[in-house]
Every structure is written in C-alpha cells, then in structure tokens.
Length: 101
Picture 1 (cartoon, one colour):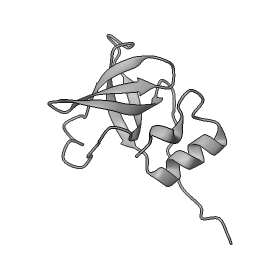
Picture 2: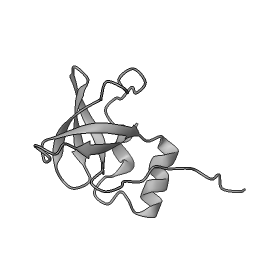
Picture 3: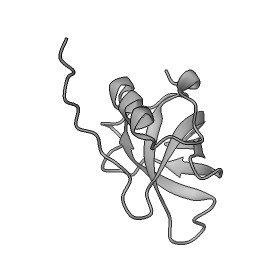
C-alpha cells in the first residue's frame, strides 16, 4: 500500500506546537506547549468562526511579544494524520499523542 502524501505546516521562527487542555470561554483556552510552558491562548477574530477546538486538539501557537510565557494566539489546528506525521518526524518531543482526540 502506498503512503499518502500529507502537507503539514511546521513551526517557523517563534511558533510552538501545543495541545489544548481546557476551554476557558470567550474564545480562550489553556494550551500545554512543547517548550514546557502552559499558556492562555485565544483564537483571533479572523479565525473564530472557522476554527472549532476542543480539549485534546493539537494546535500551532504564536506567543505574544509581551507576556510571551503566558499568552499566545492559535494560528493552526492539526488533524490526526498531520499529528502522527509530526510525531514521526520528531516535532513532538514533550507531547504524547495519547491525549489527542
């Protein structure tokens, strides 16, 4: 069986991969990041109606310039196939895919 080619957005510059731990309301959520920090992230207005998240989703976040260790914006949501690809390629060092939905 031939393996399907998957296009996956990888982290660039200061972007970090994380996993949604809890929804806080108001378009905000708590995300456990690959760098060991836990951040309160928001979904920017341009993506709010298109991006539906729940605990266990793998996301790509961009920390704010101010409060970089505490706050960030969600810029991408990964599918299950993309998450498995990221794990095979070594992008998920501190995140286990057991909690993924």
